[in-house]
Length: 322
Image (tube, one colour):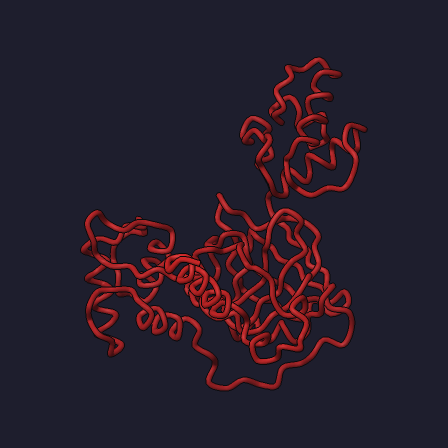
């Protein structure tokens, strides 16, 4: 093995250890399936980026979140453009001075932690928390940005959450908790509860960006305040049902995007259900628009006298009952 290959090999081992949950590292005998998974739903949360004034300007959704956080604190007066310009740097410096940090205008680890502590601030007094007595189930409303815990059929507790952005939506549907993990660290907060979604990895988790709670901000996961997710974690078991509700697509056919091979998500899952109901596709449903789904759709289009495009468009939605 050459020197470069050896260094690459050792680097990969280090990274695997770095991002492995502390539960597994501290207890090698514990089953991996009970404690962790390869989390990929929110790549920006694994390695938070350092933001600063640079040329060309740094841009992105996370910068927009930081602007919103500083706005909420009354420190930043500009718009949420997602651009790290001179006005944002000035606001970051003002925040750092106010909270006793090095005033360098750079959003690094210490500045992030200080912001998080402000938005994650725990109540001075916390009464003893009641425990659900019956069967626990969860309903997440992506429009209202809430997570509601039910004890049997009664509302037990409601929490504010952050959900997926428009381009990376939270998966609408009926799911179950697949696995749980503690202390992922970095952007996933102190708890992780993975959902059994067939086309990707999504979870309910804590966050190091508590200022995003109540917004459409994630890559599809459901973010909670760490103190809230720790509470919820105690009541949730593997197999706990999770219903996620919200708008899947616009009600008017003309306003919907075309769906075709390569797409995945709730909309594809509904298309597959429609094709099964019409007798053109066989289960299972996985929410992935692959060759079998495309073949079934083309056959439906051919049989019904539509142009054979392999795309779900304005003519096909009503045929599939959508």
